[in-house]
Length: 303
Ligand code: SF4
Image (cartoon, rainbow, N blue to C red; front, side):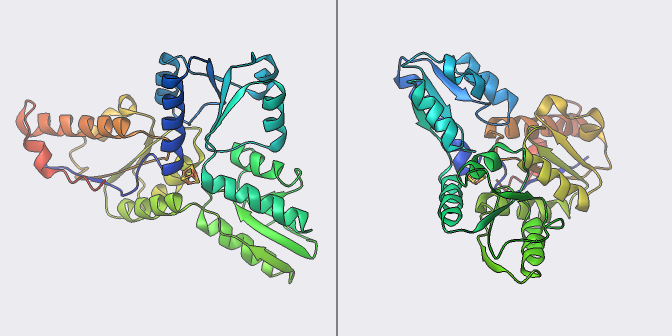
């Protein structure tokens, strides 16, 4: 059996997540203080476990007041509200702010246009930490919408922002809904390029393969969106957190000749490589009855 593996471009760690992990590990290596992350640093259990092995544990916001002065807390790439920043200061803890610069820019817009009297509308998931954080910068006054369909009776001035990992189509639907109401509309497409590019390459690859493997955390919103996009194009789309979750049929079915792979922003390269290796290993056994390098020739790695 010859099986081709196509890795979608921009699969895996984005700039902001890589920066947050690097900042945390680097700080921990260079400092003696106890280092905590506010919530899981990224939505990937393997990475969180690896951080714990280095002595970096997550806490939630209720535990901030119990921090000892001199402890360090890392703000993850999603960012936080000004209130939580204030709590950390009060606790006397040091702060490593790994908020992604793209998210900080949205927070600044929310604050600026809220002060100018605009109603802030955020296209995204109201329970997502990034959205909760952004909302904090406009005094928790934002309207959070999935696709604008429920928006009615808006005030005269509105400013539309989006969660960085939102689907382009939801942003566009919201703009349509808002513009249809004839208001003074300021709109910033703040969907991150990394997300757009990852979604677009996943979309393309999933159209031409027999099976699509999406690798990422089940709680990761950008991974779930990749899964949705790929499922629309390829009914044989599966979501796995790592290679151990690959079902046997997915690696053994001889009818699956072309496999596409993409991965969410919180998936490190080593997990993607493990999945590829597992797919290659089975393929090589099928081809030769034992493991040889022959299978690698049929493999295309576009990463
Ligand atoms: S997806 Fe974009 S905005 Fe979000 S952390 Fe990554 S680079 Fe930053």
